[in-house]
Image (cartoon, rainbow, N blue to C red; front, side, top):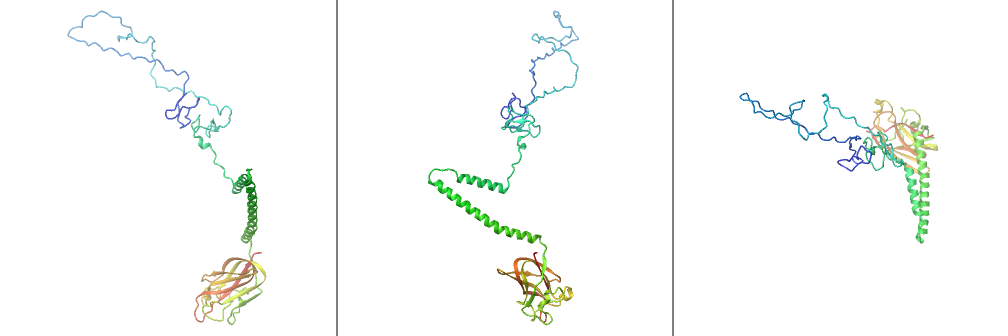
Amino acid sequence: MQRCERCAPAEPGGAFCAVCGSFLGWEQPGDDAAAPVRSVEPAAATPVHSESPPPTEPAMDVPAAGRDPVPVDAPEATISAVQPARPRERRPLVRQQPLGSQDGSGDVVCPSCATGNPPQRRFCRRCGTALGSAAAPPVRLSWWRRFCRFLLRAARWLFRPRPGGWGLLRRVGAVLLAAALLAGLGYGAVRLGSRASDAIRDRLADPQPVSPVSVSASSHAADHPPELVADGISNSHWAPATGGAGRDEYVELTFADPFRLLDLIIHPGVSAQRDEFLRQARPAELELTAWTSRGSESTTLRLTDQAGPQTFHWVVEDVVRLRLTVRNSYGNAPGRRTAIGEVEVFRRP
């Protein structure tokens, strides 16, 4: 069995370490180490002197292959001559691993080679791929499923049988708490449900114009009565009797039936033409007050100093009367009056 030099021994038949994923090497069947062969070094040659021949020695039996001496302890096996060539690596023996465990239970399938691995392995036993990448990300449940599971666990804990009188008391308390929770949820659904429905309808609805049945004012100049703010013409206007900033002067619109107010369009000044627009004072800040069946509500409208219509979005239910009160104005001076050319009101159908 192959052993990893850095970690623990691998399981039988594994080619990669189960802890670090290191390659353990290829196993060759019958690959035993060959017996060592001792090298034979040639004997040193005898120097030849030209002056006198060497002394005569007894003749020795020399092999026909050469004149080199052969050691006495040389191996009996002979090595045949081979032609020189490039070294060639031995072909590895590929072992087939089983795709899963014996019973197939608890296997972790490798994402690369689809090999089954025991659950405790961190790396594939066939290709060494990290098995942590095969785990799919956990699926997050929706909020209402998590809430239902929480309620179920809480109910099981509360209604679990317990000895003594505390068990009954806890059950009664759990029933009362559940009833209070359901009552609160029902009340919130009724209140918030209607508001949410109205908000959606306000966004999707196409506002429709609504005309007042009467228009009045705190005061008005000659030839500039308050009815001119609802005559459908932007070059006719209402102006108060006093000149200057016209602070606290107002114009009021009354409607026949209650309606849900969505938008308000105001045409400030005496005309939509720039040169005529600058000849008179025009409102810079208006206080809008709406009367309903529940009382009155107010908001502040801040206008820009430019000719033409300016739209404001304000949602009020059951409106029966609107008042526009001047709080500040542009271009006020002696002999000038703050003028409002037209007021358009839109309701939800």
